[in-house]
Amino acid sequence: MNSQAALHFRRIGILTIFAVYIVILMGGVVRASGAGMGCPDWPTCFGSWIPPTEESQLPANYHELYAERGYQNTQFNPVKTWTEYVNRLVGVTIGLLILLTAWSSRVYLKTDKTVFYLSLGSFFLVGFQGWLGSTVVASNLKPVMITLHMLLALVLVALLIYTIARSQRDFLGKIDTQALPARFKSVLIAAMIMTLLQVAMGTQVREAVDFIAREHIERQYWRDDFPVIFYIHRSFSSLILFTNLWLMWKISRVFNKDQLLFLTGVALTTLVITAILAGVSLDRLGVPAIVQPIHLVVASLIFGVQFFLYSCLDYSEKNRIPEQTASV
Image 1: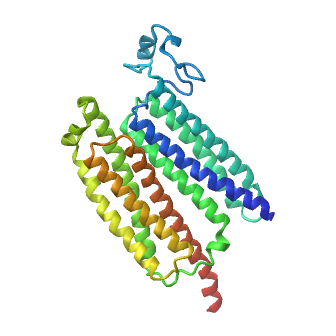
Image 2: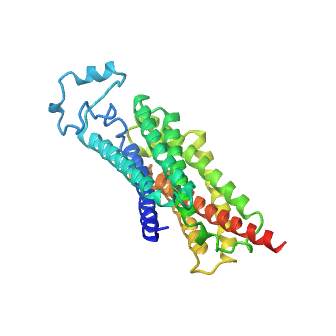
């Protein structure tokens, strides 16, 4: 296999993963700024591929036109419109990067076809994600659709991470994880499930905040009307913190500070603490808009780091199986 081509594939793949997180961040910005319906139609924006910059560029009766299409109370706001439009452009960029990732994965067709098929699957998943995004717009931002859209983005992240990890399975297989507790992997899986649940609850809390915002203009009064799921979401963060701290504690007892899994554990712990601090600021400072997208993207990064850690453990274990069989 051409090592240079393999390196090129991994670089594009890693860039694509970062780009997906930028899309998640942009999605958070769109939600926090209330720009979700900045473009009431899809794939165009107010009927154009490049949205207008002034209301005068729209038909005089555009309110009625969009009301007939199911988008009630459509109001043109150039900032919100272009925020949503930039979000869509970033999404298109993801599609192009995924296409390049799939194309460059051809180098593995002779040595590991699974890498190629996983890359191709990521490309089709992005297409489905784009369709789901259009459905979110068409549904006038229904909570269930937004939650599915968010969770699917995390599935895409996991698929890309696994694809890149598989292309490096020989390297990851050399990591000796035998000294970790037998239940470490099970706890890690539980931590990933908890993170997904927390993200899902967070999107529901965000929907409640949007509803409350329509009732109360001043942010300092929002917290008085927070639903029960907010308090569940807040309390659940303690369980997530202690679970991930346990993982880091076990990692620190086995690996040196310069080793990959130790650094991964440090990143995981830092992200969890950052997410909790961001959540506390949202709770205590009147839900500042600038913190909302940060809270979301950090939570998404937690899942990504957890899944990478899982991939390392998986390939390390698979590499031990042939050795154990040979010794028998």
